[in-house]
Amino acid sequence: MTSIVVLGSTNMDLVAYVPRAPALGETVTGRAFRTIPGGKGANQAVAAARAGAEVAMIGAVGADDFGVRLRAALEHCAVDTDLLRTVEGPSGTAHIVVDDEGGNAIVVVPGANGTLTSLSHGDEALIGTADALLLQLELPLPVVVEGAVTARRLGVRTVLTPAPAQPLPPELLAATDLLVPNEHEAAALTGLTDPRAAAQALLRFVPEVVITLGAAGSLYASRGAEPVTVPAPRVRAVDTTGAGDTFVGALAVALGEGRPAPEALAWAQTAAALSVQREGASTSMPYRVEIEAAFLSPHILEVDSA
Ligand code: RIB
Image (cartoon, rainbow, N blue to C red):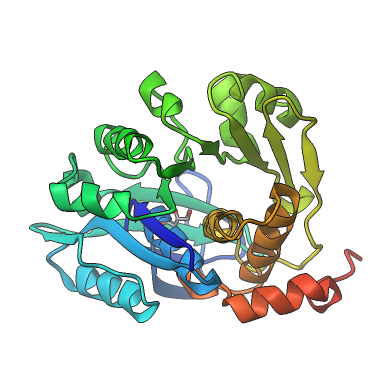
């Protein structure tokens, strides 16, 4: 079984479902509100566990009710939380509006996530046992860099989701094996809006890049090979929150199991296509049996765009 460690955030997602997102200074009436366990790190952990990996999470929750629920949600998905700290103060929260098209806008307040600034010996030992370390940018940057550098030193594959978008220190890029930005993050990193050009530019720093393109699928690029675009199944999205995290978690599992990159991308896109048809981030993530069924029979999830 593929073994994955996630060094990342846990947030309670406070989600308002609205006909359309309000402009600054405007009030709109929502139709529903839910609290859903999320955070890019925890989402990727849940996605990978449901996709069939053995997963452990390094991170921090607050000493509040949200922290109890966030830990329990991970454990419910069989994610090992032995190295998930509970610290004084509030848990991370994400304040999300989801509109009737399934699009979202998010404000993240880091809370406990902001307290994790360095790794313990136990964290390092755990990372050393993994096939892959998944990283995002919702923890303080120094610990993300330390995680990547540690994994590289221990021969563990590093998969970095550069979100929320921000400039990446050279030492982080140098310790990244696979970079998985969405098209907006790729443009922010490179200044190039064409995904193929952005991927080529990023290959100067990392050996492999996957750029997610939303409904258009994803682009895989590696040094010395022609980039490959893998189309996504056409589905009707009700909530795209966490779709990228679902993709990354499933991709790490597929690559860990030795699937060739284009097939791994298609498998991960199937997982993401299933997730956007359900509300919430972690709550929407599919189990392996569902991914396999839809991967083998894509017509199960495809809809007419009309
Ligand atoms: O990627 C989706 C996640 O981003 C949400 O679950 C929210 O917590 C924010 O961190």
